[in-house]
Each structure stands twice: as C-alpha cells, then as structure tokens.
Length: 299
Image (cartoon, rainbow, N blue to C red):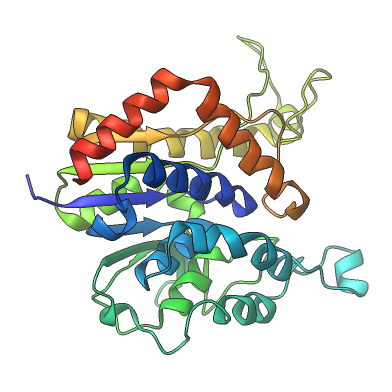
C-alpha cells in the first residue's frame, strides 16, 4: 500500500460549507493541518473549489471566511426572457469565473501544484459526440481555475464550460476516483456535504410519472425519485468501494440535515455551519473517534 494520504470533498453547492466546517473543527481539535499533510486533494464541483483553494495554500478557515460572499457572487441569477421561460442556465459562467479568479490566480496551472489535485468532470467527446467522464490531475498543463470551472458546470444551473459539465453527474463523491488515481492510499478522509432523508414506501408499483415527480404527500425533500435513486447509489458506491479497499484506513464524515437545502440557497450557509457545529457537539463519541483516526492517520 502506498504511503499516500487523501482528502476528498463531495459536491453539493453551498453545502460545501459543511465540509469546511468539519475540516476546520477537525484541524482545531487535533492540532494537525490535515490539508497541508495530505498528499492528494480531491474535489467534485464545490468540492473542487475547496480542494483547489487548499492546494494553493489557503487554510480551511480562510476558505470558510469567504465562502458565503463567494457563493453569493456565484449564484447571481440572470434576468430576461430566457430566464423566465427556463430556456437557458440560471447562472452565468462568466460570473462564476470572475468570482473564482478573486480567490485563485488564473495563471496557476495544475502541473505547477505541489500536492496532487484530482477533479472529476464530464466531457463531451468530439470524436463520437457522447458524454464521458474525465479526471483532471496534475499531469495536465491546464489552469486550475479551468479545472474547477469544468467540474462546477452543473446542468440547468450553469452552462457547460469548454464542453464539460459538473463532475457530480458521475462522481459526486470523488474518493474512489482519488484512490484509483493515487494507486492506493494509507489514509483517505472523505468529507460530505450533508444529506436529507426522504420517505419511500416499500414495494411501491410506480409508473413513469411517480418516478419523475414526487407524489408522496408526506415528502419534504422536493426531489425527482429516479434522479435521487441514481445519485444516491452513485454516492454510496464510492464510499463502499473505499471501505472495502481501505477498511480502517478510510473515514467518512457527513451528517443528516434538518431540511433539504438546494445547492444555490446562499441564505442557508450560516445555518449549515451551525448544524455542523451542533452535530459535533451532540455526538462526542463519534467526533472523538474521528479525531483519533485523524491523529493516527495524518500525524
């Protein structure tokens, strides 16, 4: 097994504040800069923003401090007829680029970074006009900010960027991808962006409409059941693979949210941070175990 330590960050829009709050608390409690000791920083979508910012030397506290204002800049709705009829994406890629460039120098390239950065994205293959997963790493002479743009181009929210869309379509939890790219790992810490429970009756005989529209009157998740199934299983697969491969050398931090939070709801960022802090306070045994694992694995 390689002596490689991996930090992995899920996608999830503004819910990336949860990942940052977890990491800040973990570094404070252990006295270890996990982000600096990590050999590999992996991130999908908003996770790629976190991984990218850490790779250029920003601390988790630095990122969390500007996360709210950055998100508010990124999620500025476009106005006009197209937006009214939902004919185009809700947000502008140029606004996203401008906001990111205030944090990450556009001249910094992946192959200049000292830590390995792993960023999943989806690329429209020009040779056969089909979508395929692409993994962006330090082997590429590509601006870091472009890698992030390509991984954060969530369909309906942002237009595609250089024929790439959000890596969360294939690897919202990039931990298994990071493990494969690294050829193994001595420790892998995967940090989620929260999840919301929803109610599904066992043995439902659903037709097409029920799979597309949530018809459960008790549901508060406001989700598309078929998409929820696909993304939930995809997320679980990454974690299960890492657990099987790494056993005690894999650790996952995540929490159940009190309510569903859409990836562009910037008004909920403070609430998400508070929920994370409350979760840590109310689960001392789980948190102590996480800190002990981090000390052992990243010392």
